[in-house]
Amino acid sequence: MTPSRSWAIAAIRTIEADFNRSADTHLIPLDLPAFPGIDVYLKDESSHPTGSLKHRLARSLFLYALANGWLHARSTVIEASSGSTAISEAYFARLLGLPFIAVMPATVSPDKIAAIEFYGGGCHLVQDPTTIYSESERLARATRGHFMDQFTYAERATDWRANNNIAESIFKQMELEQYPQPAWIVASAGTGGTTATLGRYVRYRRHGTRIACVDPENSVFFDFYAAVANGALPQDVRGHFNLDCGSRIEGIGRPRVEASFLPSVIDTMFKVPDALSIGAMRWLASKLGRRVGGSTGSNLVGVLALAHAMHTAGEQGSIVTLLCDSGDRYGHSYYNDAWLAERGLDVATAQAQIAACAESGAALPRSVQHAPQS
Ligand SMILES: *Cc1c(COP(=O)(O)O)cnc(C)c1O
Image 1: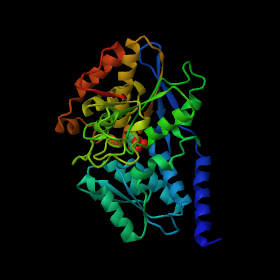
Image 2: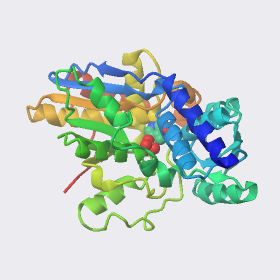
Image 3: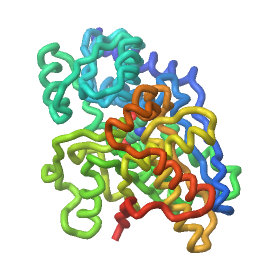
């Protein structure tokens, strides 16, 4: 066997052994008093060793790269990331003894930079968020390393049929609940990999569960989805959608339609104002007694929109969503009133609107847009 093949075998075993030492993440019930008969659950992805749902993705991307023969004993691993993926990849790179460099927008939270450096990774910050891909390619060439490219490979690196992917794990943990087959699973898209895995899995396993995706401001996914859903565009058109600014909800929302975002497996989409996402995040933190991240707030807005609609239609059932990461990474931003005021985000009003919906059954503000699948 060649030395590089032996190295890859040992590396895969190291990652599998790490998985074997790990436990699954919890599925936590969330009480919504306004909607009796609608049971809501949070899949707590913050409890992974590296603190977010990107732990699953990073493991899959490393295994995919190793199985493809793309990594060698001295490869520098490069990633374009808004932070969470880079933290998880830095963890796996250190596990394999590989150098790691994250290419990130300069606006990324200092806590995320500290977490990447904690795992021995380097951070390469760029002013213009749209240049993270070209900078990553350039660095990969310069170091003769490997650009992981999560936005391209997330959907195909993840095993969508099984292998304890997030969908299989949710369905196993729901088995003894009153409504084991969720009416909806709600997620938001960064790479789009999570919604792709969820959507493919429910089709493959022949569940009736539908997938809802929530998009923040400064992101193209919602408009792209709506254009595909109403037949104005074929689903493989990508280049037409480009923004020149980045999302304020870290982890989700993209300035371009990513290759891993698959509209055909998403059953409905919502577009949520950032203030409402952060208001929902804060309301949820007050109910759980611990801080959650911004994208978890976005997800909760989607859950409330669907719970309100189900309740109005007299339907009962379960809704599952993701607690994507902890709020500990956002002490300087979403949990900092000065940071919010500087950006004109009226989170107090938004939090009251969320409470009115979750606790008293009021409708959400009209600023939440909805694009149903046609
Ligand atoms: C990446 C990410 C998401 C979205 O997941 P994708 O599978 O990339 O679409 C949501 N929240 C956080 C905090 C993330 O880091």
